[in-house]
Length: 173
Image (cartoon, rainbow, N blue to C red; front, side, top):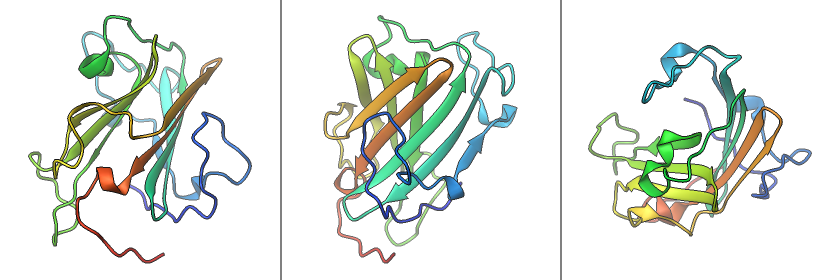
């Protein structure tokens, strides 16, 4: 978990990290076995195999994510599109918010979204929507850009508040 500072500079969702664009002072670091999920025979082999840092920011319109991932092999499959993007390199997030109760660990109340670079370009896929504010399936309402340079992949993603929660919430910076 981390805090999400206010986006003093609205991030450009272009797959590039501009100067002063992201606040990595309150970042999440992903570099431990307990944070990795082995799938279909693919095993995490340590931080030299895969590690990432994640920045989260917000403004009145969006919740923003920037992931800088070091991965020695970038993998995506032409056959694993749509709901199966999780079989390749994907940034996947779950958000849980229960009105009046704040965050919850309930597995039946959450929004679950994956973003991936496929042969057809970036793909945002909604697996579940807590308040049914997002249609399950491919989503074109959430800006996303993913770039790869050497062993570094940058995922930038904006999730509109209207896609997370159906009611108006007053947020103070």
